[in-house]
Image: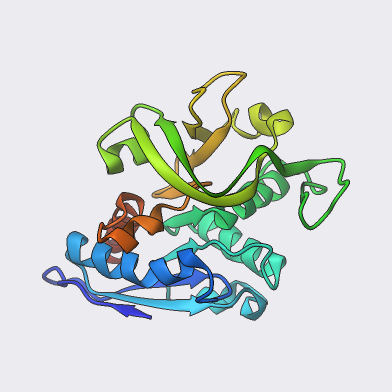
Length: 251
């Protein structure tokens, strides 16, 4: 999968690892290459984006040479551990990271296990009955649904979208378990988007961001779907700009 924009003077082509198990029957997967092409054009960069199947990520070496990681929808993945390895690599090595839908869910499991030390943190879809299911069934499934979200002021998402209120699309039945939300987002991992109820006890988390990282954003919603209507998704534009900045620093 390739998308071409205009390379900035003195900058090399940005290489992005698109982590997921490609299936053109998935709406988000059909949107991904269009989203990347539109975002690269808007960001003014030259982009090379490669799909990387989760079952091929036996270790972090599989991601050598990439400037960023996008963990896309489609969970459960063929190899959930492969997805977690990719996310941990991006987080620990300060590579720009975007997780959407299944990528949001996996990012929370990875953080719970490897930052908070909750080694039993699990996803209820693949580990039913787990005592520490940080990802659990949503109170109301959001399969082919849209709804409002409220963004936290000053968040990367708010800067990317230029607003604090959005209408977004979903295709998911699982999200952050409210029982663990406060503990998961009490430190550098912050909740930065919420459902219509907004922040507080009644609100459900729809996105998180990691402070102290060049770019680490994960959304339960699927911003890439905007590309199917011809719009460059703002989080994808922001991801590519962060990748370009990091690539420039490493040259």
